[in-house]
Length: 379
Ligand SMILES: *Cc1c(COP(=O)(O)O)cnc(C)c1O
Image 1 (cartoon, helix red, strand yellow):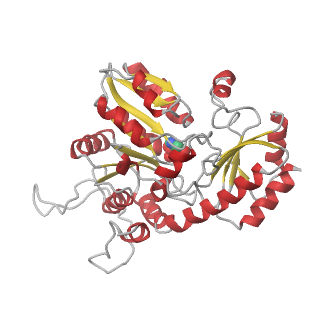
Image 2 (cartoon, rainbow, N blue to C red; image 1 turned 120 degrees about the horizontal axis):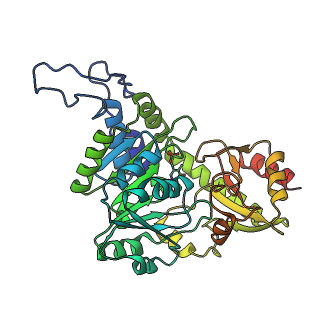
Image 3 (cartoon, rainbow, N blue to C red; image 1 turned 90 degrees about the horizontal axis):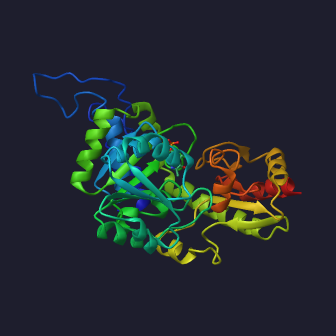
């Protein structure tokens, strides 16, 4: 089955008792057992719930995986992966990554005796230089936030296999419509479902997808033990969101390309970071592992003045100033003071998060209105 058909049909069946075409919101904590030890596959909603189950099967299908698991947020999904590790284990991670991921690594799991190495992975073969017999997890975000670096998943998976480490990919920016890491050798795919998968800025949720039965067993054990599960109503909303993922992503990509080109041609704009440009450092890798370049763009100003960025944020009227990304509406943000404000200036400037950097999550509005908005705000 192709992507759009899977997005709409995988995991969902008309309700057996009523014929309802949409999966009901099973707003229940428990399930009546006809006798002890007998149930219909559900015993308690932390362990499993029919609405969540439908979504987990749908997510697995669109990521070309066998097993899916949903969590109360993207961070809860990352937390689950880290709980598979033991004290003394080491993790090699992308250095240009989601701020919350950096925070959970450094401030939660480091104190349990797990060691983290943050490195640039634009040359993925170099990952091996930071691996040893204690390396149990390689954490890759691609494209990265907010610099839109692209990391070669096939090359990273070769290193992971050599060291017997799990390769986990944060696929939030690309979505399964543009990139399927399991097909490229990854062991676990992680999503902040909050973003493109939900797609309507109305749910916070996370997910993991994998193919390996042993890894899946661990994920489900931790999901049930730690209990960071997601609610049936939210699962319903995400099932609805995913039905239009392929259509939305097509428009995100089209609008993203037009805005990236508009910005690159603007005299006040300095560097534009978008993997679709042939001049992008890893454009070749992006072309090989992605089916499109998405709607996330970052750029800075000629002269790199923070006032220029802050002034633009005040002037936009269609773009909304907000954290998050991946919804139908266009958002604009300032990483240096918002998402990456916790990282010291020197550290963030090393990876390119300069004072005038602006990040756009290009929505699916009419692109002429988006261009006009940026044009007047750049004046
Ligand atoms: C938002 C985000 C997360 C965290 O997900 P939440 O749903 O906000 O907990 C992780 N990784 C990336 C790339 C994100 O954009």
